[in-house]
Length: 164
Image 1: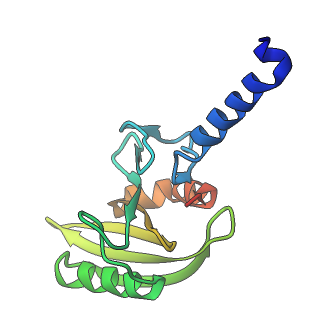
Image 2: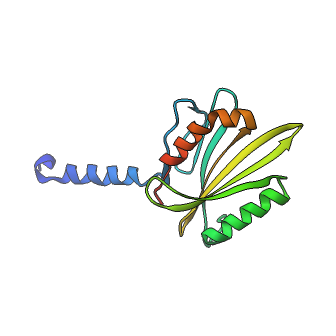
Image 3: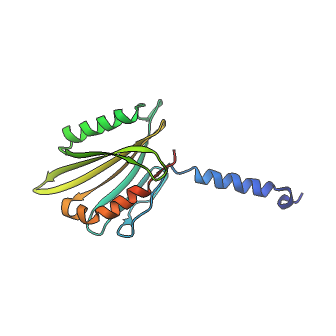
């Protein structure tokens, strides 16, 4: 049997390509001012500037089952993170903004500040919540360095796509 003529090989390739495209939970573009420093996989991503501003994306599964975070809606997770950052991290909430992913998902960016060992730090957490996952894209570093890298951080955040 000639698999090329039957279209079988084309069907197999199409299924494989669809499967590989669905393996990721998000898409993000690394700004030229940063390098990717951790192996990009389906759920995690880390990049940083030469002077230590870090950008990280992670996807946390939610729902029922073992080793899965309990189910919560967007407002629940924003409130939980806001409170945890204040009470256990010592961060002050400076601003809260509604944002949108590159492909239209509504989210929230929490902007925090904190002094650590006499130096001011800035930290942003952006959340997108789907039925099955919590997407957290965070960025932080010493305040002056973060302000220098802020355009790159904002470009990366603007490129973020929630895939599932």
